[in-house]
Picture 1 (cartoon, rainbow over the protein chains, first blue to last red):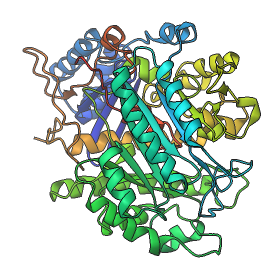
Picture 2 (tube, helix red, strand yellow):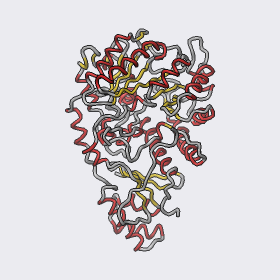
Picture 3 (tube, helix red, strand yellow):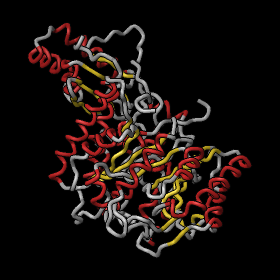
Length: 459
Length: 65
């Protein structure tokens, strides 16, 4: 299966099942597409007629295409469905926990997927004892994994800062004893991001996600405190001070775009104006009936944002002022292996969320939905049926993915998005698919346009 | 740091000199079925996204490579 598309003068051919990427000239672009379904002689005849090339040229191009086919780089067959079938039979180890250290928040964002941090339940703070047990649970069930991930999440985790610090120190002690490497991450709205938090986080946390929706009027539409005051004026200086001291360590300024700002590129540019270079911007996750939900009418505007964002990245790269956009990050030579590409994020199997009371859920998006409770940190994963259900959720589990060129980039998509859109984690959130495909196309185009590699036919 | 991740290279293919096609070097997915699956890579939700699965945006962190 191939996917061919064009972007700013580039002719790009992706081969789904080999992961190959080819830059081609206009003749090869057409011949590769035709040759997928038409016989050689017809392809040659069409190439001569439509491109005015000689028979010799056409035969040479077709010969190159055949060489790539023989090398497994074009029209590669799908050999991985069996690998996906075996996923449910494996021994399950756990390598990542999302610790909900606070089911409460000091902001009152109306679009919050977690009902303002409470996850449709009571406000609560995770105790040190529960967190400590969660870390022990992770290590006990981590098997052969050396790298473990612990994310401090909420609600707003800084509302439980003392416990966050204590748990980090406990993790540091335990990782030495058990020969593990724990990567701590933190997501925060920035309201309580003071110098003390900055110093500790910049020393101990592998990655920090800083929530800011963009321009002041955009951010303050939703990200308000309980008095209705916008958070922008408070959090932006906090974020700037934090990033100034972050050095080379990873962080992301992360925003949510909604129906109210489908022109989100303006918010990304605002991040850059504020001096931030490690960026992420996500579509809102909400009920389709919500006024902030993205609509079909938003789609052309959103697509244009992703295209123009790609152009901006290329331009800034040329100017020596590059920036990172999370969804445009691709490691083509050392990216995820086929197991990761098929399996996806690991939710419900190797990645679990932990509530302040120690209950386990497949991920933060399912917390509060009782039928998705997996067990707890004391008795372990007892809902093994649910675990198997999530294990079956991969790039090959949905009929809609079968003929999709992007399936080994997206792994079948986010189970939570599928559940919210269709009522079933094995459903498909079609809107999300459209966004994902556009982002991957742009990400690859940016890689190629900033590589310095000349496209054939342009020399 | 921004913009410095993951440089590209062209897949070298012996003496073949294709005038119309340039193949970018990418990870061999079939080969990764033999050498991959260690599980040391970061869980994708733990990084920026938290909503849309970004497996493609991850990097391999196999300890022995």
